[in-house]
Image (cartoon, rainbow, N blue to C red; front, side, top):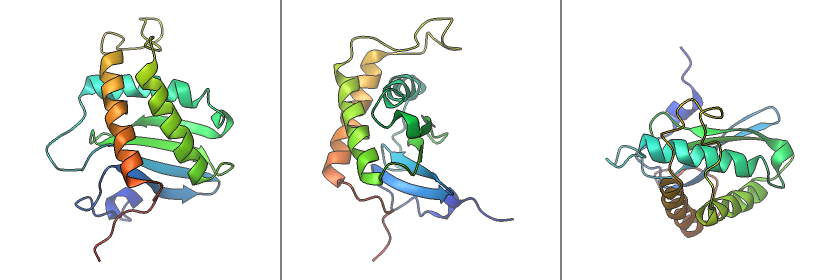
Length: 153
């Protein structure tokens, strides 16, 4: 059976950053890795869910909104996937992502936090989203706009 692309990445080498995971036609899948895989520190359900609400809302209201297809958490709790049409460059996606993460840290409202808007609305925290976004933004800025997975040299 053919392995899916994400299983071909050496997760022992992955550090927090933004990676181009795959390209399918005009859709680019970005691996937004917030922490080292298999290192013992994982996002809580609360943080993942909260960042998903905030970042998905802000991305879909950003200048690349028409190109955004999907934003959501990885099951392994070490990051998010962002799917974007190739109408915007990886550099622009990186720039917008940094703007969105920074905006989350300054928000005063938790988006989609009512029973009518969310199937688990009690599992949301603006403070958890801010903390996670602040840490990820620092990691992104430290690594810079290198969208390639690390490899052994």
